[in-house]
Image (cartoon, rainbow, N blue to C red; front, top):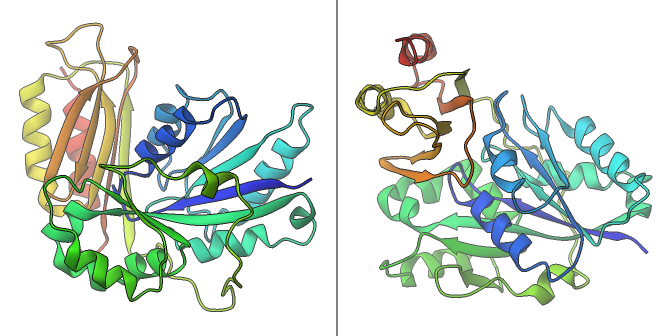
Length: 301
């Protein structure tokens, strides 16, 4: 019997990791492996998912829709060769990935005998679409939505969904779940998947327009210094995320998330001795050398 594979896609900062953690929390005894792709060399998301399942594999330094397709195939084949069996495999695509490339990889004739594509779920950040109306015309965002079988709204509290829902229905999606109110239907995840042909013949929307700057340090940083650096860099960023240790909070670690103009800082459930930060921006807007200098001085005493 083939192992069902579910692909979770969505734009940078849409809430894919949070969504996958919710799926793992409702596993009900099923053994689920998670493959997490991060665009940069530091995989923040894999660490945040590892608290929910032991079977987490991070793929970093590229995008599995294109440059890491071979790594994805090898990873799945290695999972299937383990003595233990899995009930499902979840793949979290990078926020810069066109899911059509992942579907292409999963159509590998040898692999296809052992796995079945159970569906592609696009997580749609409602707040981002509201704050950034141009997002609805973004070529990558549209590719992610168009190539999904199901849509899941995130960060929708207090936002009128009528206009966005109407727009998304023009893509022909039959299932749209508001995650602020409802759990994603378990029967969709464990069922036979959608009956449709995937268009894998078109050209992919590539990740070339994005660049990452990142760093990690075995030290703490004063909160005011960190806030100042982020305020200087944020106008150039599409996304930032990290695990940060502050001088004022010894023995505690915090998860930092920035999407557009929205930033959050939440306690991590365990202390991590290494601070790490990933910045993502468009090549035309992010001064990578300046950002690298900011990171180089951030954790200096």
